[in-house]
Image (cartoon, rainbow, N blue to C red; front, top):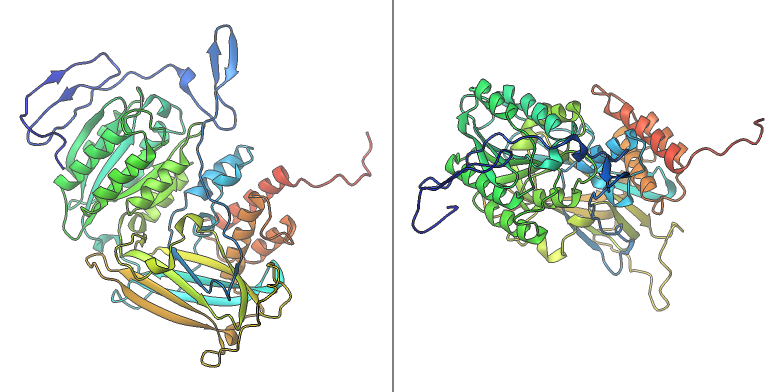
Length: 541
């Protein structure tokens, strides 16, 4: 995409320190960045303890302007009326790490910051890997008694992408698109961002290419496309970045895509990695306009990953949605260990795609299932007719990625129904053709170089019901319970904080990275904040 058309005129405009030097060059218009001066320390933001802003002679806390957007929980559905459920997969994990930083800071997370599917998909469940690349992922299913209500059942659907050694990964063409606006000045933003990307640099190879675009008042090309083994040059370009100015995110995205297309690698990983607090306030600030821009650009084969940073003005809604429409993924970086997890340990699954537009559809048998509810995925729900429509965009998965979804099921005659009986409704007739089936799970996906989808189907038999759920299902259920408790505990009302913790502890299993142990600590922090233990009444003054 050309960033300018018509007659090209060489123009140099030198602005005051802290701004950009703009240089027009043919055939593409690149912007070279002059190092900006940092703003005053008073620009710091912190979610738990907002910075003080001087107003006349009075100091007042800086306003918290974090933005979250999440629809209401999926409703319970009557199978006889709506037997089919369809949704797009989601590999994002940003909601979990973002809520983690709030809990660790002693701040109660807003309910809309909690997305159950991103909590569940943060963890590994050790699904079996595919035998080969012919089918890029393997499907795992399990039906068991629900840990939160013995009258109900829970159905787990798991997807595991094939794993690929880093050395055998295709070439990478990456553009780091970095927010250097004034709001990025605090330690948990640009300084953490630079250290995060510095962990990725040693993983780069000679066949890889990296460019760096920064944006504040204007968009600037900090590093032209550079071989991945020129690590010193890449690190030096990162280190020179400083925060200052307002946030022209739209111009930065346009320039980043132009750089990605300039170095496009057929069959490789072509991706823009946007690192920002999401506070776009100059240029294309309208979210719908940005979504349209990103959706148009994904058609060129360049994906968009978003990495969220910082507190106080973080726009979770913007970062998550741009990744969705950009055929990428979204993560929130709250620490160097999280950066290492996303950019080093899971680099392949973060940056590469093995299956596109992955959709899941479940048809429940009304003679077996009275009601069902999909846990999470509210903003990924699709129309049923979209499942077989290859023009409809859906989520992508990378090598080694795991995707997990849980359904709560109420069987016919269990007495656990939540919807009122229909006055004129009849009991569903027995399905003799598929009498032992609870549901059929269908998956559609496209290989990266294909435009038509493949279909996988799998029946779930009533006879497969496990009275003792597997370790993976129990832990995933505890994570779902934690998410529900943080949102008010309306969907699993009979499951106490203590019971959720006991379930998680009993299913901790092998935990080499300590992530499940950390989850249990977060669960305790959430309980102390939302449902503290009542005094025994035996204390004395």
